[in-house]
Length: 133
Image (cartoon, rainbow, N blue to C red):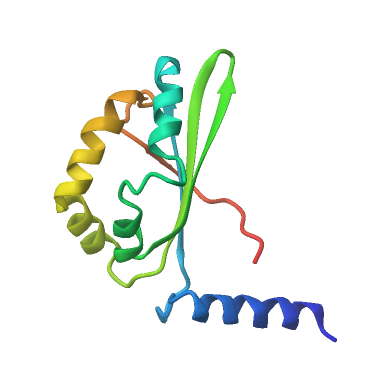
């Protein structure tokens, strides 16, 4: 059996079953921001699986597979975030999500914990240079 066809078929089936019915492939977004080391425990608590936060709003605005990773480099902590946007109006959906009262409250708590990279106001969006389907 053709392995590439099997992987493509499995990916398509997964994509259809998870409600990602957009006609365009997902927009993959990678982001990075610093994190105040004194806030790591609280940040982890806020993002624990049991904390509802704004998870349902991420899905409502077509943001799937949202993941955040922490990494320390030379004594400084950084977050790497990744998600796949599956809608058809990225700018419109992001504006609607930013207007959600719960998102505004969430950001009032989380934003002060973060340390933007030089020249940034928050998360810095990274340029994708490789993807292996």
